[in-house]
Length: 302
Image (cartoon, rainbow, N blue to C red; front, side, top):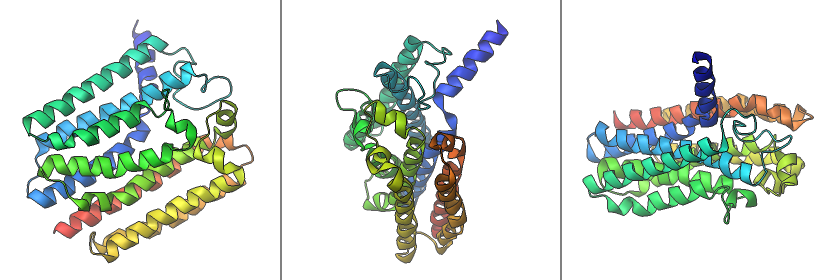
């Protein structure tokens, strides 16, 4: 009985994919800092609600990807996409689907409660965009992730939508500053999704999933990642030059060797399925740069 419980817990952790939650943590933290900068108070109780709702949406998105990709056969066969809990028989399709519905319902209730209590109904469009993007990434009839638009949606949602939304809840006022600061963050999260699509290029193409990497082809896929990070570093430099963040944010340029290492791995790996084992490097690159931006914002307030 105890052994079965441990296996179930491991399966749900596998389905949740916690290593990717840093993608949610960084924009939430940046939005919180910018909100405090605007109103002068941290409002920890407000941050708790928006963080809880955001992490539930992130979890629901992961589960939705498993559910709808399974229904469409995208994760079958040699594919390594998704958490694989359904394909491995660790969790039933029904259990994952019910958990997905529960997470979406809980996140919506939290969002509606927060908007009602603090009279922030102007946030409703942002909440609607986040919900739509989460569900229809792979869900029919939209399935925008199958048409090479996944990175664009992730950049928007994990950048401007999340940073602006968090700042708005904290300060009770919208501002263009969170949108501007969120640009490198959204681009970095998009690069995580982009890299994760590289190992599955063959199986995605066979299943009719035309991700950005599939559209670019193997020759240009590595260059696509480089272009994304040129935009990341360029936007950080511009934020620093404009005085939006402290000059310590330029420390981000010290992470260039890690980016070079990642690109070398891609170019030197013959079978790109093996790239899946190196995904941690892109997440580490994002985490370090995200923390540097956070440090730059905090230094600016001192």
